[in-house]
Amino acid sequence: MRVLLSAAAFLIASVFGPAAAEDVMAGSLMLHQPWARASIGQAKAGAAYLTIANEGSEPDRLLAAETPAAKVAQLHTHLMKDGIMKMRRVEAVEISPGEPVVFRPGGLHIMMMGLKAPLREGESFPVTLTFEKAGRVEISVTIEAPTALQPAMPGDHVHGS
Image (cartoon, rainbow, N blue to C red; front, side):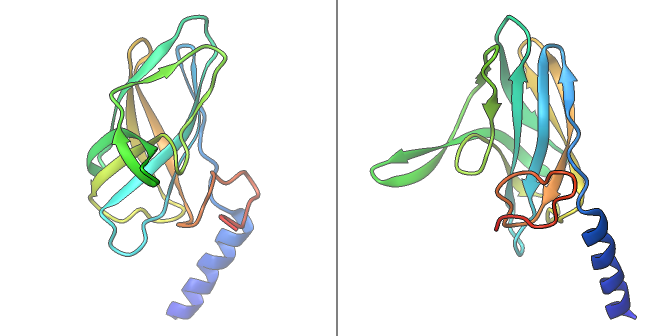
């Protein structure tokens, strides 16, 4: 019975694919395709990614992130120092008009520490972002395959290859 249910779940997922992340407009900011990678094993940390475009004429700043999915969420980036890639906390991220900011693996990201449960592919979780001007904005982060390099597009079935 378990095998039959697993096969049915796989068939449904392969036909419909994962749900695409919803874009959110907040003031002059467009928050595009929020996503995260599924957890591997019992990992207690994860990261979320998205693109933020400022369609207005004044800059805004992303100041903080929080989620019920983790004990702590912080803005982070990766920096190369002495030939070693290191993560560093970022106090704020400037969102200038006409210059989209891309959060992606190996760059800016929302670091989530103390995950309360594993991030499972095909599920989603809320993240609240706090901007200087746009205020607090809740987004829904879609969880992709553990090997994903970018968010799935509608109709995608293969990730991270």
